[in-house]
Image (tube, rainbow, N blue to C red):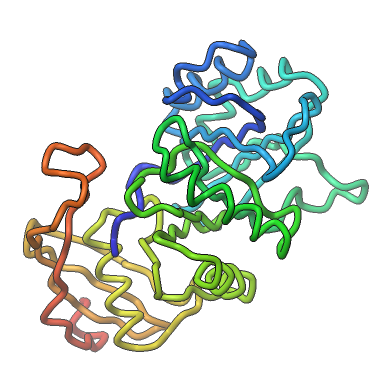
Length: 291
């Protein structure tokens, strides 16, 4: 669909059971959480509030994650904080590192010095105050997924594309899925856990321009290559029609991506409306064509 948000290359996830304001930057208490959201936004790191599906538990301790989806190896670091004031450790310098794709060393290391948090996270938008459909569709989906995938699942604040509720993000790769029922969501998660994407209901990958998302999706559909890291858009140039060079498991293609008129369910003035794209003219590139 090519409708994943293009801004979220790096993440700050903070457990906050709620209530959540319409926009998380409006959060006032607890002050350390509000300040961390502001610092992350300034640094270009996307902040999200998260909470466990079902019964709300008080905090602290509160779970915090930072991570990177693009610009190098993807990663997550996680840590439980006994006091929200510990969020001050994620200062401007640490968040600048996260924004550039570098680990800030915030996560808990194991006793033997092994890498911090390495398991995937599954975020389901359940931000009812922002959009009622996210609560109506997202909350029950989060509970269904939690029953199957346990601690990997969190409800989260607004992720963009409310009209695609229920929305799911698979981290650390930043894969967005939308318009999900339980069966489609389970299929997407199972694919992710084995290192693949499923093209049904895939909205795209966060951090990539929408025409590049469209080019990747088309290349996967054409070739049947589903490995999460097996397809990458090496370059995107021009304006509509854009020219994309796509690497598919070591084979390169060139594709033309054009703007297309979209049907906007929310109306033409909605800020959630996103572009639509047509991919055409895909050709196989030999090595000499790239010199």
